[in-house]
Image 1: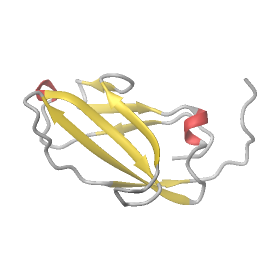
Image 2: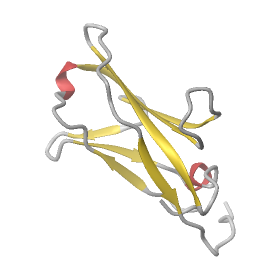
Image 3: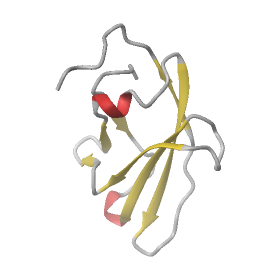
Image 4: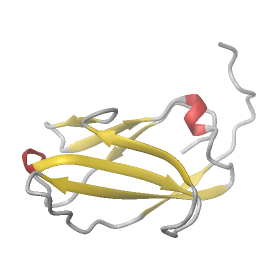
Length: 108
């Protein structure tokens, strides 16, 4: 992911049936620790869309949100799926490398 851009992260969860989900949360932290500071949180169905045809969650990151992440570093994304019955199946933590930009923050 490039700092200062507006990426859409595409997340596919293996062996997952979205019709069984009540909520899917995506959290981003600078360290792979539960107690690490939360940098960003996105949730489906609130601010994440699901592409049923391709089985992908689409996490749209704003320029301002992407600037939260430190360039030339790694951030960690964890996913928590809450099924309609309340069960929370295990997921893996994904590592994302943040590349820098030479552009200053866009004027609004």
